[in-house]
Amino acid sequence: MEAVLAKYENQINAFSEFLEDLPDVDEPVWILGARYDLKTKKSELLSDVRSRLWFTYRKKFSPIGGTGPSSDAGWGCMLRCGQMILAQALVCRHLGRDWRWDPEKRQPKEYHRILHCFLDKKDSCYSIHQMGIAVHRSAQMGVGEGKSVGEWYGPNTVAQVLKKLALFDDWNTLAVYVSMDNTVVIEDISKSLFLISHVTFIYIALYTLLSLSKQLHTSQRPLDWRPLLLVIPLRMGINSINPVYIQAFKECFKMPQSCGVLGGKPNLAYYFIGFIDDELIYLDPHTTQQAVDTESGSAVDDQSYHCQRTPHRMKITSLDPSVALGFFCKSEEDFDSWCDLVQQELLKKRNLRMFELVEKHPSHWPPFVPPTKPEVQTTGAEFIESPDKLFESEEEFEILNV
Image (cartoon, rainbow, N blue to C red; front, side, top):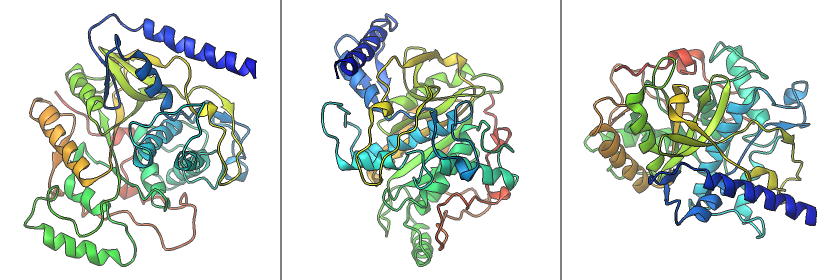
């Protein structure tokens, strides 16, 4: 026991040394919408970063698909980052943004239930098994980057898989909306937030008629709002991030709805959670740990799911231009607030916009059809949209021109 405590203390000390090594600047640190003054809030910053769920490479889990790999080391980093951004949304949904992990205290049952969603076994709804098979099925259909289980994926591919798998998650009832062509459409999001079944299309049709004379982000919706994970894939340059977008990119981490960013460097995915000055702060999935085997419904041994050592930093200018922004809106008011912030901080102040926010579905686009859960028993990985409905290839991003 003493050895375990000593190891834990060494990890905390390593993090404390990192805090001392932060740039000597007056700028605050921003972590997922929370602001920290290094002179007075170092311990709070430590607690916040340590409380984020950290998913890394794992080994010795049951083979994916029965005969596939039993470790995702070397290829699963973007899938793990996708798990982290979704887990952050679920933590905010069930525990709140201010929740903090304390290894000395008993955690709420919702916390352990969230962890069960990501355990490395085939019956966990967001496991590496489900995500890997889902991407593989899309590749078989000619969708995405043409890769199979055991190869590396981009942020947009992972975002599309999260959207699909969320349809089979009856506990969290989370809506995942992935924007297209650098455009967030409020009308489409509103339709996506309904609890879809074979009867709710009637309500959608009625709602569409009622919405014609009202602005969608302020009108009263006839059905309950579902918590929303909004993912915005972007390509902010060709070979490197264009400097004109850096300030707007940093503003995204200041928003209370910030759920982090998927990105990194070529073939190296990171989960970005904040910044200080001109450096990004991120959780790195490139650590291989033993798979955790826990019985259904029981508490999870969670020590390895929290990063208790030095988080990494990198220059924003070193970021690969292909990223996916994440935002979580728990309520309709939360979404309205996010829309206002985007208008004020990103659209009105910037001549060159990272993305657009529009009320109505563009007339030149194909009609929007909210994603639906098939009326059959399935794990979810079997159902990937047809090639003409997905925009998963890195080459299919619209380049943001200057």
